[in-house]
Length: 454
Image 1 (cartoon, rainbow, N blue to C red):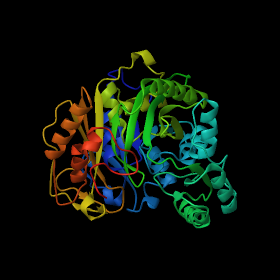
Image 2: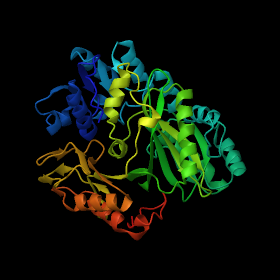
Image 3: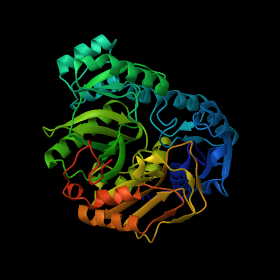
């Protein structure tokens, strides 16, 4: 990883998240000589990654009273003498009001400026900014829709099928596919109600539904001085209900020309909007072979280890250094993208039973032997109880190889050597995908999980 001098500005850092990402951030803090302080809910107060560490109980198990309680988190950070807060992903990671609250109380928010986050959190202003920087967009509405009648008019002009999406959305919530004009009203009302419940924002916009596309994303890194670099792209097309399951880099479906053109445009767009920190631009590759911008995630991605395995760059360390005011230590020419890396997310779910949640006690946990080519990011150990209150991720397994086949073989071997007794996990599904002909021959898209009937 970086191996640079210690970060001078931060001595204590508050981790406003839980589980695997909290453990991940703490590892980098340890390497930098920074003391991590965990904010935890009652359900997580005895979690393995907290044992022997400083922690503050934020509130009950409910996220609304703990990991989403912005004022409690900032107060806990101040009282525990932390000068920075790392939000991880999910929860408050992309909440500009939380970032502003940190700023108002003199605590550094490890992420982009609140104004930039606000712009990116509203999908239509973000898309306009990206179009101005030269990125191609998915056809659809020019801004948010007034009502279902306008949605129908725009849909007919765009051409069915279309996708209604929440202006403040994410994770597939507030999203509805519409294939005919008579479906618009019901879909609009349903998407709006879900968006209001999930994001307290019922505004919707519309895009052409790209079926059979590939989901491509670009990792970016920017400092406070206008320096921006990309760290290559990832293919995240293996999905279920808009949730990513497997991510890899490079995206072999791209032509060299399309890759280079889009990477350069993404760097220009990132600089143009004044972005700071680690961020990810997400695209859909349409049937015509063009990458079309969807959104920019103003945070660390779950799949960031894929990029770390190819570049040797610790993205959490980079986030912390940039937030501390340090300039980027490398130029684009300094970044070497080596070999192929692939990651799978292992969740506490039963894939043979409709992916039903499987909380409970992990009676026996073994990750098997792992060399430098295999990485397991987790917060789990034997005896850990997976709570029912949060995301079901129990670990991520990442493998590197000189080419895609080698990386896939190493990942499959690592999964076969894993042991997780007491709960059901998605390991069988991942093994089925990795052994499927369609996946190995790179013939699939976002519509179905290759090798798995779900």
